Figure (cartoon, rainbow, N blue to C red):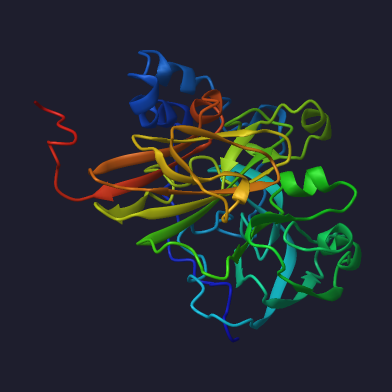
Amino acid sequence: MEGDPMSQSHSIPRRTFMKAAGAGAAVLTAGCLGAPRADAGAQAQTTPEADGGGLDPAKSVDLDRIAADPTDLPDPVDWSEPRHHEIELETTERVAEIEPGVTFDYMTFNDRIPGPMVRVRRGDTVTLRLTSDSGNSLPHNIDFHAVYGPGGGADDTTIAPGESAEIQFKATYPGVFIYHCAVPNMDHHISAGMFGAILVEPEDGLPEVDRELYFGQHELYTTGDTGEKGHHAFDMEAMKAEEPTYVCLNGEAYAFTGDGYGPITVQKGERIRIFHSVGGPNLMSSWHGIGNVWETFYRDGDLVSDPDRYVETAPVAPGTVAAAEIDTPVPGPIKLVDHALSRVARKGMLGVIQVEGEEEPEIFNPDP
């Protein structure tokens, strides 16, 4: 379609199974938290074993991966006059792994968390067709925070399994905004994965960067303990108490680390723009890049006000998409975390950008 605002490739290979997520997290976060404690491995060993500790056995999965590829987002806007876009999204209910041996009943847009980024220019018109997979068991809809209209479109896109609905809207105001399911139990549906981002570029576009990445943070509330093998059912009471089992980046625990699909690789000297969609449904993200700084930070998805500069840790509220640009002057890992650090070390909220290139001892010298 003209001005296709979504890319559909998923290029990162299936991950190598993790053996000890707790110990792996302790090592990966050492750059911010200090050296891992001597008993970190022993603590990881206390995680319940494969007998499930009372949970049902892990289910057969519908998808090998639920985590969206962070590099899979549409190209920047390169048109200067309003365009019309036809967007199709599908709501799905799938079984996939949070981490190896731990399954969960997810809900998604297009089988990925976060859902596909929609990218348009201010003044563009979008015709959206939302379809609910016939195998679903629940109603779904979509609320775009970029839409003037009842429920951000949710009132007119509420559909039962096997049904479709269509709306049309004009992208009247610029920014980067969340979209999410907004049925009465919306907190459950968002927690289970039904959120994404719509980027409405200003008429003059965004500053040029070398690379863009797109992530989504959310909480999973389950009947099991973190790391407990078996099938984790959704736990409504845990969600009411706002006590998640996992805090995930793109639906899985430690997905973009050496124990997952691998870090996202970039080259030294590249300027990177990162979009961080926080579905929640409940927890504020204290968004931080270990070993770097948000050189340019677009607070609350505001792309037209003067951005903040050199921000170390930024609050991103649930129901918000933030954007930041970083420079990469030295090689090594940049660890994307929520600086509520127990979520990193204990609950899965960590991703890594690996900067490759020659050392720059005038900037950072590991062996002076």
